Amino acid sequence: MNDGELRAALLLTWDDHQLSRSERKALQELVLAASRPEDMRHRVRHAAFALAGELVGKEGAAGVLAWLDDVVRAVWPPVGEGPPVAEAHFSPDGDPCGRLVGLIDGASQRLDVCVFTITDDRLAIAIARAQERGVRVRVLTDGDKAEDIGADVLRLRQAGVPVRFELSEVHMHHKFMLADDVLVTGSYNWTRSASRANFENIVVLGERRLVERFEAEFERLWRMWV
Image (cartoon, rainbow, N blue to C red; front, side):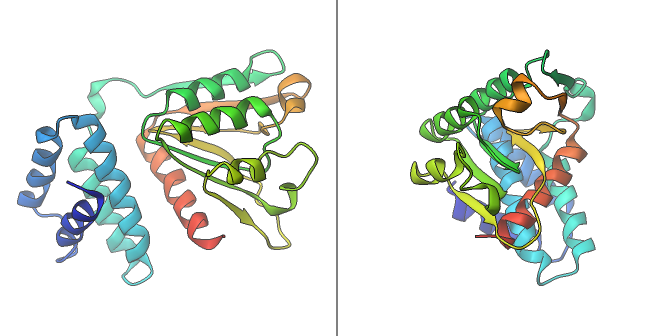
């Protein structure tokens, strides 16, 4: 099933603004019948979020979000399958950069990066590696920081990585990343000084509802900016 067919199948489940029992079962069977069920589970979820982003502008947000939650619950494993990841890393001694690089290198489906600036080449190189191996990569960043000395985002865009900038008089000061189904957030700027000198933190979280909240925020900002 290609992406267009998957979108069409999900759109049919929205026809009556709710996910019926038979539609829920059909989505579950779609995942289980795939040659790589885990990959299909990710594809269904990502396609559902993208479709929900389109529908929110035309339909009531509450109904769309309820439908989205039903779709995700239909294809996602039960909570009882194991505790979600929950970690904290601190700089300058705890090597948050190394953990970020490890998560980027481990991503197989998607990598969504939403950070104020990127001047640490280790992170930029890891992002480029993800793009090269076929991961869906997107970067959101602050436009004012894009041309700073040592900034890497323009180089990433030139390398084919989709990058969008916040260009208004206010700042895009988020610092989070979604690597497959793991969320990373915290005070940590993606800079050498954050790694070597500053007192900073990242938290690594796998709690599904938190991941979904940040996923929705990323999609909202991605549609806003160019």
